Amino acid sequence: MATLSFKVTAREAALIRRRAKRERHSVSEFLRSRAMGEHAPRPAAAGYRIVRSRVTGLPVMVGPAGVPGVKSEDVRALLADFP
Image 1 (cartoon, one colour):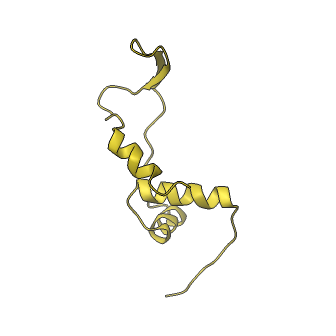
Image 2: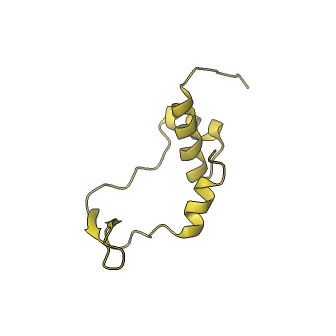
């Protein structure tokens, strides 16, 4: 199998790694699927809105019906390797 290499900024590398992890792919699998056009379509942004929390008074993003919310465990997993 051939190997390709290319340069990205540190910020771009972090973004690629996060997106690959979110989709439960290796970086190679993630980039290969993107390059070959084999990725699933992203959910449309329509239906998302910002509301004010009745508990904290802070702005909170609310997704459309049927879209699962983000759990504390998900956030912990995403931030586990954050410096």
